[in-house]
Image 1 (cartoon, one colour):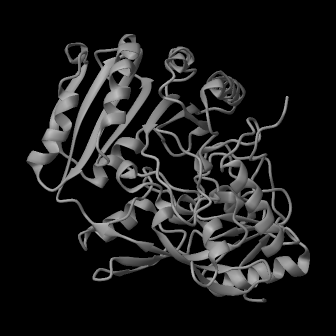
Image 2 (cartoon, rainbow, N blue to C red):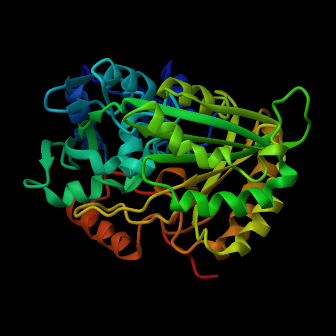
Amino acid sequence: MTDLPILRRADDGYEQARQAAIWNGKKPDRFPDAIVVARDEADVVAAVRLANAEGWTIGIRSGGHAWSATGVRDGGLLLDLSSLDRWEIAPAARTVAVGPGARSQAFARALGEHGLYFPTGTCSTVGIGGYTIGGGASFTGCMDGPACYRLTAIDAVTAEGELIHADDESHPDLMWAARGSGPGFFAAVTRLYLEVSPLPAAMRTSLYVYPVDVLGEFLDWILPVTLAAPDNVSNLWASIESFLPFHQGTIVVHFPIVFADTDEEADALLEPFERSPILDRALVHQPPHPWTFDDGYAQVDQLYPKGFRYRSDALWVNAEDDAFLEPLDRIVRSLPTSHSHVLWAPWKTREHPNAAYSLHTPLSVHVYGVGEEQHEDEPLDTFVRDAMRSLEPFSIRGGKVNDHDLVSFPKYVLGPEETERLKELKATYDPEGRFHSYLGTPEPVAS
């Protein structure tokens, strides 16, 4: 273990490594006893065995995009897997083996060179590991379901410090947990084996920007249209402060994306959005045109400037209950900063025979408080927390595994039965609690 690249709190480079492990510009006041930025699987094995010897609990980082920096804890070991970022693509078999630190956009481009794709994250620098194990919602999510459903096997280091290969035949319980438990997973995944698909021949989009005054009419129209759309139609909507030089105030941005065999088929799928009853009030309207994954990353990355301070949370809501539109309207009209925003993400619910992932409805609502200065943190915390409480009566399931804050707002991120099963499996596979579980409480707390 003498060659293990370990940084202790008094060492030069420790604080740089700690802050680098957190993509969010808002760095928590939590300090591990030591940090290992693993270079390979051997380092991961050695790090877990060292943690056993020292009695340390382990937090895991792959991409560092978790809003609450769940892998960075007080005491114990921060095991940083971001350098395990290589992939091996087997185009004929339509499979790929990839390290947890691979970033979404780079990975998507590499697959695209072979005419393939995987439902990667919508932010360009999200790490594949945490994203996939936490479910993973992509631009193609309505068509593909959660990314974890494409996970066929893993290489992982167990709490005992043993490197194993797990699939549904050899370790079904581990695979169940790896498909959706996110930060609740009780091993260090060093490689993910994924199914990939042929890149759709036609990918098209259109763009609509509306003033916030039409929000109610927009949602009344778009929700049933979205719920009735086929699986190869994806919709993203966001309310943000205007980026238009000719309009001030909050705007509603809508960009549907469709995946088809021909441009003609794609444009036919986009045609219902071209018949929007409020199209004459659009501030910007771009008719159907080609779309690429790089285009999607460019659009989404504008919402998340690196170095800004983020507070976020999300709930699955009952889109058929019109009453949720009232608190949603209040939230949208009270964005506290110019970069704060609300994102709606329609979803197609699917099941998997062996997956912990278990919470979803046809619509998730994500609230982001975004600032640039530390003094903004408290009002942004209050904004997001109050928004979640106002939407909670309309959440029939809970929150998203990958976009949660379980400290300020405890809630289920897996179904109740799945939550209990995960606890039982962790007690079996990690009886000493070597790996940290969720930061906060992944189930409601009685008031």
